[in-house]
Length: 522
Ligand code: TXA
Ligand code: MG
Image 1 (cartoon, rainbow, N blue to C red):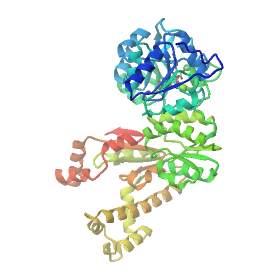
Image 2 (image 1 turned 45 degrees about the vertical axis):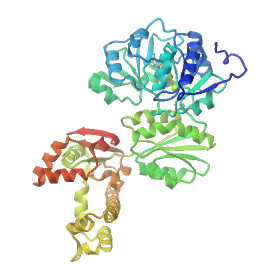
Image 3 (image 1 turned 90 degrees about the horizontal axis):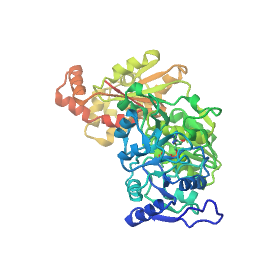
Image 4 (image 1 turned 90 degrees about the vertical axis):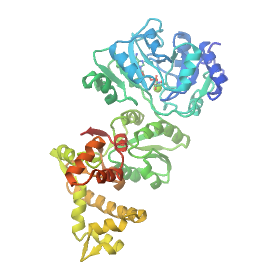
């Protein structure tokens, strides 16, 4: 079978195969081995695959996608041992493959001559990846050839994360689409160049610089310098110079704290537009809208981005407003794609830093907060709460109304509050809701009074109170359980059991590690 569709004007009959059926994977593999094009699921995005060793087949990928010929393809393998068959991996490359394969990391190495020039875009190097998707691995093994595959979208459009997206772009242009469900990660792999003495990240993805630094050391890996992708120079990664990931509608990327970006979008948006906004704000919009996941859920944001663009395009919205995730860790990949799709339509509302510091009791959060805030101002939220309880403010008046039994001699008695909510979930929730809203309001009053100063918020209930929505960065302070217990016992003079009980009532360290922008081990 020869793929001739791209040359002839007649449309090809594209098969929709389902990976649930092993026979259909075999059919797809036979098409690949025979020189045809098959779109396959991977854990990042769908790839448009061809036998990487067959120059004619690979050429058809460029035709089907409308992709510039100088943009090299990634060669997908199903066995780590094949790395050295198609490239010349050095020590850096081998270490990275060992640590992150199968997975969302494309490793650029010097190319073996068996890889045709068309596959590597004429470069002396080749990008190789072993994907972590059972269907992709089975397909590659079954086909018995390495599979060259760019993302399976029409060049310039958002990458496909579901088989139907591929179908929309490629129906009639390729032999088959192998449906393996929705892609888990949602943005393309990290691309890392290992042909120099230091690994250089050319495209951010789910494997972050910090993860690679754990394997190669802090000095062993760096981000590509911006100057390497200037239009007038030969770019390091040819793919980075083209317009990318763009839906039909103009994308407007709004950067800042979630509350600030929400307020901005709410002002600008019309009923003809679409929005991609965090879960915390989704109910506030009446136009076409897509839930971007919680403001701190970087995995969900990556997963949603491209499919959201395609969905909003189907609704024919005029403009798309996007709340930009905080640009740290895994979100670097999402923001990188978002920035390219926005093509300069970027609004940055950040004028200073508001950093939320969170951690469990005994993690040393207060100590770290003091250190970090040396050049700005620190608000100790627990202390602020204690002070507010002692004054005749809106919060105490509200508390007196709702918890009259705790209002004694014209004052709220903290111990009485604890008693009132003890073992009473409903009352505890009511108390938290009430105090959190007042504390957040007071903190914002303090912050707004000093508009040019950076703030650090030592906030044990950063997430519960909603204070995280006002922050431009979230820092987690983490210590191991035994250290926390020992510190609490010493500081508060309580027993081990009491300390353990207190920790059991707090959010787990894993939550903070997953959802904060930076983790400080203390
Ligand atoms: O997750 C992914 O990487 C997906 C799935 C299908 O594996 N593939 C993908 O391929 O995103 P593509 O072609 O859309 O992006 C490949 C990127 C391009 O920016 C390309 O320029 C760069 O990798 N690249 C490939 N080989 C290279 C090389 N030898 N030197 C520099 N950059 C290279
Ligand atoms: Mg692509």
